[in-house]
Image 1 (cartoon, one colour):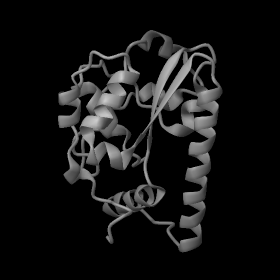
Image 2 (cartoon, rainbow, N blue to C red):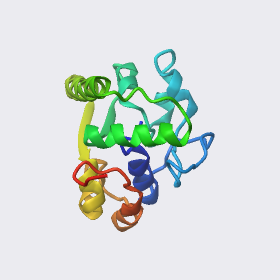
Image 3 (tube, rainbow, N blue to C red):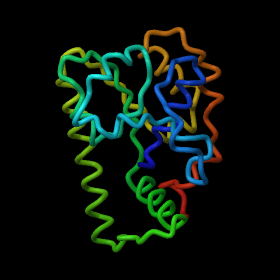
Length: 184
């Protein structure tokens, strides 16, 4: 959570790609443009057959569930990479807004940051070793500072034909409220 996947999904939708989303999770203060999630993703470890019927559509899957992709499913994965400090800051602020308890003592935060980095490394290794899987990593900060470049990369990766200008216009830099390179 809080890695920038919703932003990339919004870019893909603005570019004209069909997005598999059910609208169950409504926009809120943490994500005012919406989450673009699909409830069956949460049960991906139990049932991934529906993915075969989703060919040609974008679906948001969080990194820990990528291992559940069917081995014989050809897919293209766009992995958003965000500075772990930004992810943790954003998660903490979301929890505070929701009046939930923080477990943010320094050692716990360091452990979470390390696990986040290991999880991304494992996911990239797994995805690059999968037959019939292509991987594109997009840096979250670059997508915000150079949305046209990010849109061009995603369009090329997906075979072209998307509205690159529309994709770039879908990025709202004001929604990046947690930056690792700026004192908060």
